Image (tube, rainbow, N blue to C red; front, side, top):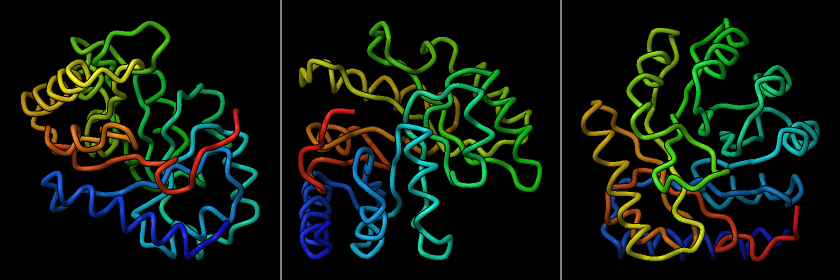
Length: 218
């Protein structure tokens, strides 16, 4: 992992965010399928955190990076409840929380401090995509608050086909739901759609390939 190149790419992404009108937008570097040196490079480049999709991969990387050298770790992939136990001492922010049973498991496994979560919403209504139905968001958010979790915001993934109009509609829907619920954070936008996301009010973007290059299949 070329740390200097990663730093240059992070700077380019930051400029893209600024050019789209984002003044206080967090940048989470998506490090899935890259080795543990990607965590260190992201931290050195000034990313606000790293994002991981796969529980087993995340646990393996954490074994090689001392706690004091880790950037904040965001879990952003679809998550099975039985994986929470292995992740709870590693994950700082849970970004793919989409059901009450998962909230209960994360809260049960986090007795020492309230977990920080984003509720994932399937704003494109694509089958097989993570996230609760938009109509269920209020219920999931209320359950999280009752459980003692800190709901930092809502999260979504744009449409698989990347259509700009559908992407904007999906992000605008998330912003509307967040406004109605009084939730401030909006995690939306990746490499190919971050400008639209920022224009629609994103407060956190999750960017992988624009920082680390193309990744191998996983």
